[in-house]
Image (cartoon, rainbow, N blue to C red; front, side, top):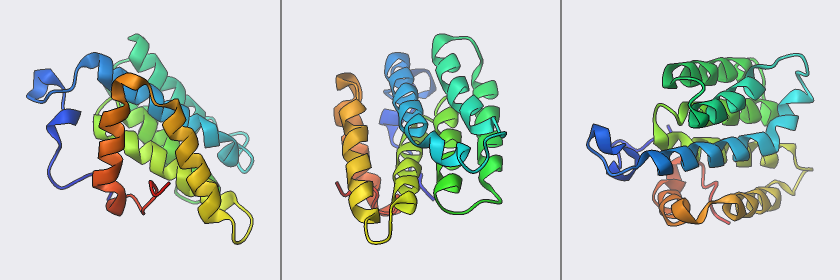
Length: 171
């Protein structure tokens, strides 16, 4: 479970009673897509002929551009997560990261799912004994990609949800 039991109004759009603007929702989706894309090669090395995770990332970005609807992006995310089901380790987590990135269009709070699964993928791909260090490096890289407009929001979300995100954000 990577979503909190009580939804944070900062991740609910204004039109649904929260405080999240469309601009910030889009920035969250783009950041999540960037995090997922950074580890996509870990999936594609195992399943080079399965386009579902890459398509999910593309759908996240297409949703931001207004080229696909939320339901299409969400469905692409589900397909990416389906690509992960029979895998283990880095490839599985990379596919989940892509799926989580696409479903940010539906629930903005999935932004941390994309980031956390990407960190888990890097940890799993690291040589024995280096997983924790690799995960911290990935976490720092992700933070460097954060747009200034959403940086404080995401960092606070990481602090609040770190314990349900496998302590991925201890970096």
